[in-house]
Length: 256
View: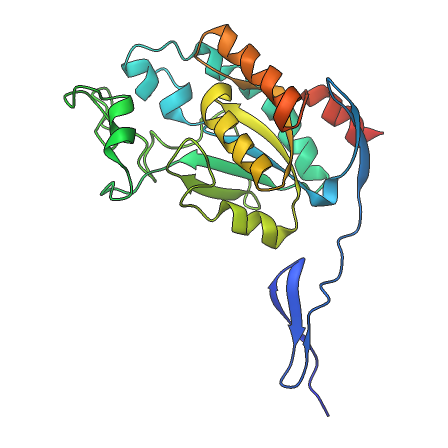
């Protein structure tokens, strides 16, 4: 007599096995359909197949004592997504939508970082670049585990949230991001964070190229770049890469 089947893997990408049988059918997720209004179309989507990706809402990009502020950038715009995210994220968690924190967090030895990446914010080689300590507090710039790379304290992270370190503007390069999404059965991604025209856009584009449905949450994104960069990003997402909505529309869609 065969023993009971045991789960092997992460649901919904799990088999059920014993010494004689491997069941590869993968039971489907229970659908959670909602209707969502975007700038170009009204969408019907399944929250059971969705996740929100919050990109780089960390001290180096959003805090007055962080790296961007140190090199003279006004980080005030990058703090604008904090308040709408404080409302949206609990609503999504309540609907069982995973929250994925995709943060720039480099290795201490920077062995996977090219000179081209190092040059972006340290063109002379003499400044405070990736991995260097910030003069104000000694936190190492965008180093995994440091204060500099941590999510700003105003945004609460829950134990069930998923945390992924990235090393490029796109969160898909050299990371397990794609594998995690596929194991979880997520095909629709909401995008939030900073900078909308850099790390958010690069990650969203790669997601589109990989076949994910992409929805940019515009009031939960920001940039320290000139406004025309934001406008160009919104235009290109609507035109080429997905859809644009806001947090209020998502919450309304969930509650209906």
